[in-house]
Image (cartoon, rainbow, N blue to C red; front, side):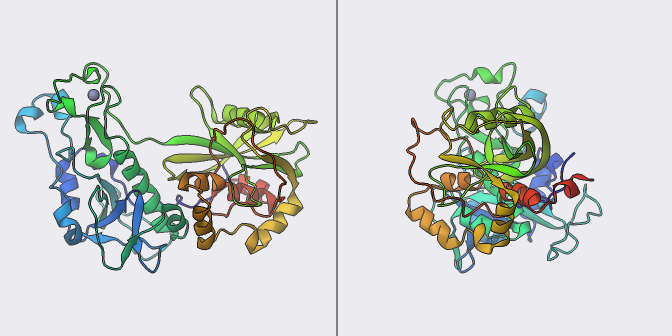
Length: 416
Ligand SMILES: [Zn+2]
């Protein structure tokens, strides 16, 4: 049973993805040629935003990107179409393989696109609306009047719910395409299929330096977009009055957050929660339950939010994997007071800038809000701690888990 919480980047599907159309070049080209098609542009994984409003994506028209599209999606030739195995190597392909990534995101089919409410879709199979694509600039420089390529984290967290959804989807897909340009089996280049939702080894359709890829025989090595699962958990004391939060050394001053970590092969969500809390804080956890989830496009995580209850009579220890600088039990009243104070969970754009100046990478900053597995070298240097002054904002699922519990809404939201 989940908690019916709508997390940032999720909850109101921004687009009708029409995933069943991805194999059809004809369908995708209809969308691509639509005069109202809109394009989200990326350079080095930074989204094109309004120069004066970094929290607003600057969508481009078909005309503005025309010269850079590199032609329509392709269908199998009549000859290739005769063999099913051969035909699937050309389904909505975008060739040559050197073209910058182009991804069909879906259609905005909300009856009133200016509305922020959850869309009512009259006919999800044949929607009318605005087709959306994501396009990478590749190595080319693009000057767009009134636009700038904004810092992904700062821009993303300042977006409205609908745009944040488009951003989370498009950034994850562009990221996946640009980082999977070579075949995992033989190292040859890959090319794009299914409107940017699938990649395949180039040796399947053209010779590559005499290479033969074993992935083309038997079980094919098609690559699909990745989503890496992370558990993130609000761990309550056995009496239910305190929550376990921790911090990594690189995080913003005074910030504590929920413990988290990647789910490993062969683990259930519950197994991963119990393992991570034991490894990071030495605390054994009894009952665990799912709360809600959040897509986190830095670069491609799904955060699985859970609550768990610690077993009785245990002591926090940080020396098992040395990932955390500190972990403590915080009483509900302390967290509730922090959340009620706007400065207690606020990360301004200036904060983001300051953090960048301090040399925190985008990934480190993302981890500060939604901690992922760190691999510190040796034992963390333990300096004087500032104490808890901040928790993540409500746009991060950690912030939601803390709020739901601290504000006494846990039982309430648990009821469907
Ligand atoms: Zn290959």
